[in-house]
Image 1 (cartoon, rainbow, N blue to C red):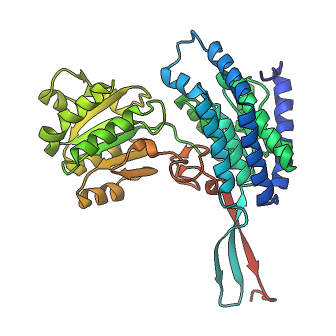
Image 2: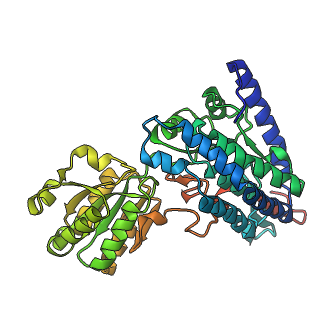
Image 3: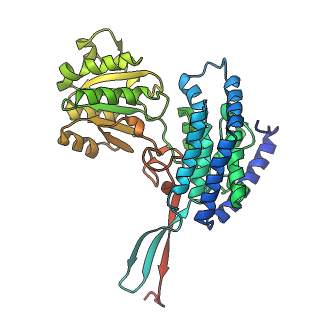
Length: 427
């Protein structure tokens, strides 16, 4: 169990020390070799597998502590660890170790007429603060990704996953020790006191360079409103699927059910289904039947109810709701133009999918929508750094500055310019 820090003054002192230690570790990591970082990542994976019984026991204790709290099934699902999940956690660390080290990569180089040679080179961001709820796997994912990119990280998990996160963190520190890297490269906040979150958002006297929140809408909103440092985040995942009249019906059914029901509590789960009015007689009812058979509740627009009454009527609020549950709102739209209007009105700019065979429809969908992730003939549940080949993600950002979409190793770097001369002076 995480240690309790009794007083607010104690929390401030502890957090200040954590910030100073992280900044010192970041300076070492900035010049750490790829071999050392990879050695640490593989040792972390070994430690996690060796400690899987301890991690499962800690998780069982966390799950017992939340019994009777009337939490959403999606919350409990994110909190729960299994042997398969722990093995996947370890495998993700090994995959990150296999990635090319981004630090020092020359992104671009060019020569000026005066003979100057200019290079743009990747550098670590520095110190990253990660605040997350109910997702103990984030402890490993965030720690590993930040380390690979040469960053120190300060982790503040939710109180509901405190014991699980601590057990995983112990394995990460063990890996750092094996590789001879600073133990403070990956720190976990040793208290569940909410004052620690406020301290992180303040930037810890300049120690933190970026904050990444992973959790519910209220947490993300607080971080975005109060943080005094840049934030990589999305407020919510209000994801849409548009089924065009040109869509293959079997494909549309399969993708829609997967996008909604594979895991209803993830941010890439579809929340609204839009059906082309030209596809009412061919696609609408088969897709709704497939969703219903999978256990999904339908909340239907008036146009849908006019054709197929019996579903629960959708309200204006439904088009703005991230259910994170086995519920989907359904509307009929006037082709791709109607779909684009609806999505632009209600989307959170996270992820949208189009199911269509008409290339002109796909082109308009890709060109006229500005969400971070757009998919064609694929499930919205692919909105994930691991599925993008990034070896995992620290989160998904819907902002337009620096990082957008899955935030992986490359997105956790900045850059600097190296300018080589032969004695040039400016006239």
